[in-house]
Image (cartoon, rainbow, N blue to C red; front, side, top):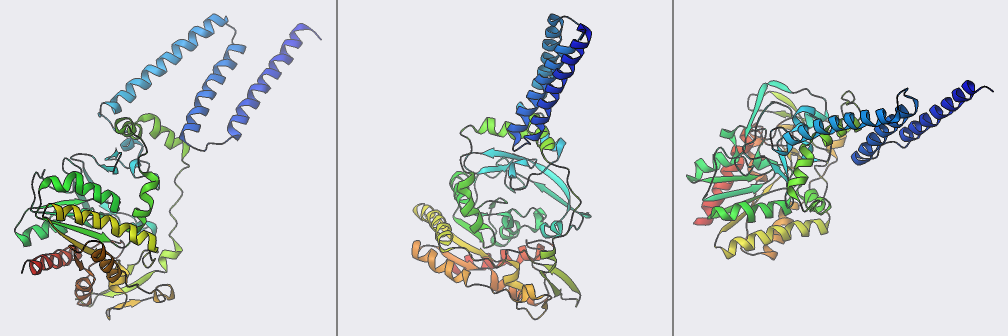
Length: 434
């Protein structure tokens, strides 16, 4: 075999080895973002090694080209990341990808070592309305109904920075009211009824551990005379159980926050995540529906969430109650009134009303628990100073009159639901004063 032929065979074998290496790299798959970044860097280095073996230029020239190209890429990368580091850009906005189960993948949120996440200071967004159940049913956003939400310096739903407040309301998305206009929020209405300043310290996705931290960090410094803790039976138990899994992810808040805003992470997530498939309505949710007849004798279809009648375990119930009791004890020590407002699921309010028809066997066989009374008894045992109001009767009474208190394609209150809840809490506060 001649030398030229030998070189050709060697070159072919070398190429085959490199291709095999690339193939093995691809076959390993990608399990997480770090794995993807490792594979990307390895592929880049393998490509340069292959170029160095077959390029018809001296190796010193290949080395120079490698250094220049790599240096240019690194400088461009540093410049792009510097914009995120200085807060000039948030790459989550550009890539627009939301990861299920990761609240920090949403634009306008920052990492918090204690709260896990919170809204950016003065963050403002507008969006077309889309209910959370409607999204699962592939109902497109409604551009005719615009959501306009603004946050204060601490990332809470207040139209101005609050330094002192007579009344503080703590809770989750029911209190934040991200589908409700500022004028129709429960806290806005409560402020008008009470004739006092009210601070909205509700935050979507928060559970009892985070709400206790909110009370300590943001609520008590406002020197309130009254604290209202709105406890939602739907996911507050789930959040109480799951908080410890995500707590203290990092001791360095700054770098953790930068990582979620960075180009590297958001580009990697876009590469790692498969294309978003066409929306397919959830069959299980389509079966969880009823018809609601309003005051004008119009019938509208309403949907329930699949988890509406799930009972918490005794361990989870006691854990949540203990956290609320700790909050009440802190308030008692500072001579602050403490009222717990029980926020019911839609099904608990609607299921037995004469103007509501349950349309499927799936919802007819559901049974509501005695959770409101159980929670009240447990809280009073733990901390006798707690005042308690169950919002269920008032919401049921209004709904029976044909006033829709819950959104048909979402788990949250309508504007009227916010009003009924505010009026009920207002009356409870007045009665306790007498």
